[in-house]
Image (tube, rainbow, N blue to C red; front, top):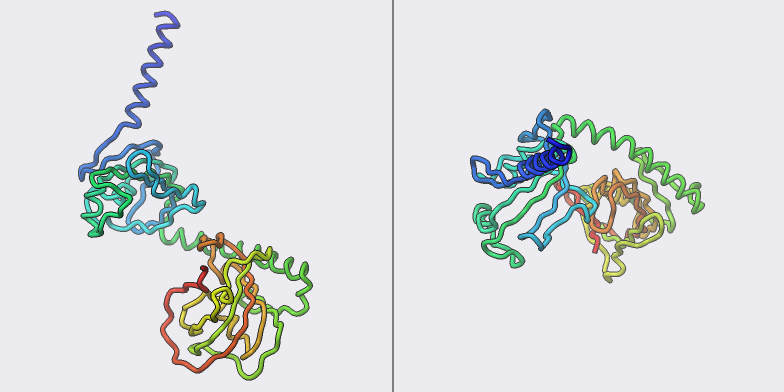
Length: 301
């Protein structure tokens, strides 16, 4: 056999391996998938694990419904028991950190199984493709440890960022730092007592990044925001900051990311953002303490 024949034979072998590697396979439950990268010796994801992955969701071959690469923020989710056989969640249980694959699911079947109407942009009978690249698979304990370590590191970064901001804007002498890491700069003095947890408050606010770019303001909406402090209705930095103020007071809250929106992007706000809010406490009245709910906004419009 000459070198040309050997090279031709090797080429056929390589091509055959590649075709076999990316061929469409089907699980016992009927889920169709293609495996692009797979580590046989790696621990596969299990129910209860926290997975982080990039996702490109397409309707057919052309229409992209979601692309987390372009969003700049991968999906993070707790892997739960599949809602039905042949589901996307079942596909995720085939994967480990570093794996990539495509799952193919009939749109009619998907929306029938989850009991929701099919969105107008998806055609009946079409096939949805979920292309996934797994970044990490962590147990609950591993995730909590990672979050704690990242939070401690980010807290130091945020504090240095705020100290530099205060020095640059000649605010250091006026700023008060609380035990949580929140900074408050009084601007116009108020009078009387401060609101406490459970009180109903009326505030005007303008939210900005530290470079001065505005991302939200109640004044642009033409009316103040009414809320109850201590009820988990707003970010922790707001809860604490408002209760430092008195009626009629104006001040600047400089909020580290851990007391704002944390490591995840929120609307126009990137993850790990230190924020400044120009606040004015217009009025407040006594209210009844309520059970804390999930923190939501100030609303970013």
